[in-house]
Length: 350
Image 1 (cartoon, helix red, strand yellow):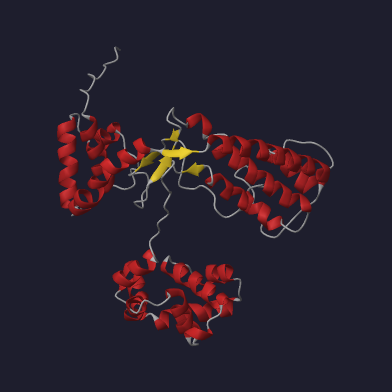
Image 2: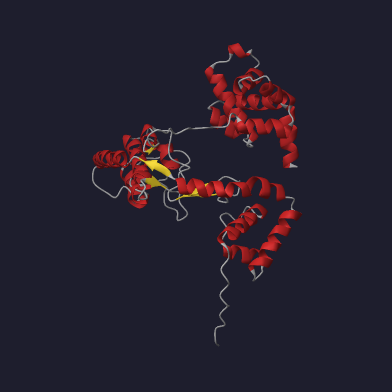
């Protein structure tokens, strides 16, 4: 049997290909970062022109033309400009950070060996598991196992063991520093171009939800919670005579919740220009806004975001660190005060 080889396809114009893969993603968001091959597979067409026509027809049928033509397409040239522009990196600063962090890491690892009573491969889940569970006999409620039945040493499991032995905190520190080094501090310098700038890729169709994704490296999850992570951000600098500007939408998700649900109480909070979390706290806790404590506002923030994303009573109890009864009271109180949101969420589920 002779193998029949397909004729090589004619090359497609880059701009047209980008626009068509973008259209495919708008039509079927499960296909993130689609390729030319995905276009043919999805449409079951052999010719690019007929495949493109099929995708654009589906776009029209699904009433997604506005999203494609007015939201997604205009962003394409901006993304290309952004990638070409890149961001300036302070290389000497990163090199010094690398030396400091490697030294800190060596110290922590030495510490771990002392606490374990001998050297082992900290990065081997099997060896680490033997030290923690067999040698040190550590245990905690609800510890999970891996698919193969071995005891898991993932961060989520180590957190359950916190406080049972000083080695746990040290292992978590070691993991954090190692990740910062391998993902950013030591990974960024080789990616810097001759212009001294980092030109990461930003993928417009990179997620099912509509968010961008980023590669080489991923600039969308540079740590911010710990001091160790924040230090990495200082390597991103502005050239002489320029500044870096940080912009953020104000309460965008809750504003959308107000628009989509039409809830009069929530709309009024925004129209009055009030602090949304303090106003919600005032309604849920039944006290005037001037009596709201920081703790109450923090709780209201958890309730606000938690409930619009479908958090149930148990998850709310965990997030607030309260009793189930108290979480239930907050939960019910929220839906009573914002009936428009209640109806909207129920309608979406239905």
